[in-house]
Amino acid sequence: MKKIILRSFLLIIIIALVWAIHYAWVSFPIISGFDAKQVCSCVFVSHMNKQDIDTNEMAEFPFDLARYKIDMNDSSVTATVWGMAKRKAIYRKNIGCTLINDITEEKLRAQVFSIPSPPVLNTDIIPFPYGDKVDDSIASNININKLNDVVNNAFTEPYPGKKQRTRAVIVVYDGKLVAEKYAAGFNRNTKFYGWSMAKSFGSALIATLVKQGKLDVKKPAPVPEWSDVNDPRHSITIENLLQQTSGLDFKEDYTQASDVTNMLYKKGDMAAFAASHLLAYKPGTVFNYSSGNSNILSRIIRQTVDEKDHAAYPYNALFYKIGMYNTLLEPDASGTYVNSSYINATARDFARFGLLYYNDGVWNGERILPEGWVKQTATAPSVNKNKNYGYQFWLNGIHADDPSHRIYPDVPADMFCCDGYAYQEIYIIPSKKLVVVRLGLTLDKSFNENAFLKSIIDAIK
Image (cartoon, rainbow, N blue to C red; front, side):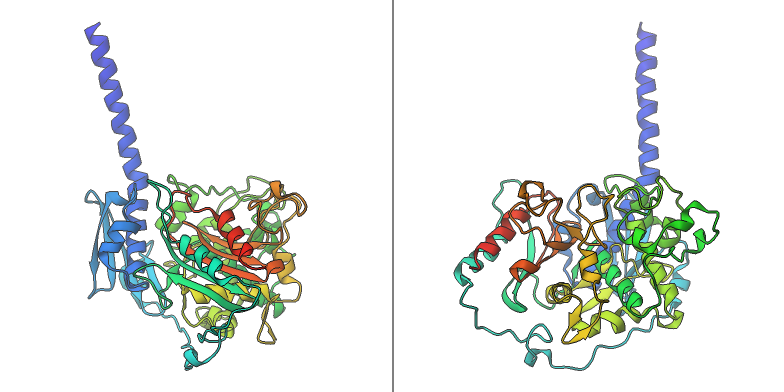
């Protein structure tokens, strides 16, 4: 009996050891990669201090397992987990931070990106949204005291043991900025991380190429890995990628090592990695939210414009056209922008993007997006049973006439939004003439989006 117990105990120890080794092998590089990349962007792009980063960004499991070192002279961050899985991210002016993957640091630093400078303007004397001058007058139908209370309450922590950590809120009504607030340590010049809101920007960039006649969303996506007409993936259209119905066998799970975490933190060419996946479903038949689809779209943008112009294209074709002079996209190690996740912008710039869609793709009289694009963006394909996703934007759900079937039951059915990890949001509500930006670090789902938006709507008669 003692031998049986001893053998059983040894077996348990061996199993636990094998599991621990496997976990360390697959997960530690992701954890240290996340820490290196995020700390790099926090320090060199958002200009956060180390104490705030330690207290907030890297304080949660499993990211608190890692230890990182900031090198201001080298413009880099190196991270390890218990001394293992060393990963390094480097900062380069105008293109932010990139994790070193599948390339030497020397070659990565030698890459050339020609980013155009924004126009030289004194935006403080130009009225918002074209500049930053804010008109203090308030429309008579807005209860400003009630609206300010709503905004202020968004920065409180009403739930014991929870952390909403709201960092910025902007409310734009009928094109006019009517409320704005920032948490301590942040201001209107801070570049905030947008995470998956980047997907919506990638969609807008696809739209600019459609408008130019260079892309057709109904045709097969120009993806080299699927160029063979006998490849079942050859039938995947750009629209399938936009609507997350490509059918690719791509797992989006951030709680473990999965396709998305491996892509973001272990791969130098993220689009190539995503495109290498086989089909799980026939294209156009099943909704499967995938950051891989978004990065394939990003590479399509790069391959459609001249190679020498690809880095500048988002700025010339979109950002600078709508006054987004404080926005930054970050590339992977192959040089392709990570349009699934890596965008940094001020809260006002995020609001400007929301206004572009609120105004049906027109900015100051110039049509930026094709006619009908915004309507299609806010329309879910029939195969999406929940009717909650369009062209890389989230929608409010199934029924216009039945609030119980909406994602946000107290918000109009026409609401659509850019949505990112930890509740980065740009809400666009055309029927209420509203664009609302909310940015923060909410990891516990304690921010009540429905109540927040309802309260803003209620403050406007």
